Length: 64
Image (cartoon, rainbow, N blue to C red; front, side):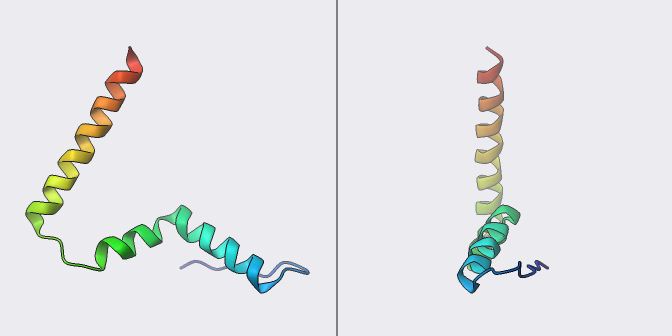
């Protein structure tokens, strides 16, 4: 659970901006979007394989 304490002289807009940045940093928005619709297990597996390939190919390219 995310909590934001008001700083001295901080407006509501500034607090909301800090809250949104914190949510983005924690990956909450991405999780909510991912869970907003049903994803078949086969599609989830395929997505994870593509992600693994990207990270593996990226890792080998940086070693050259």
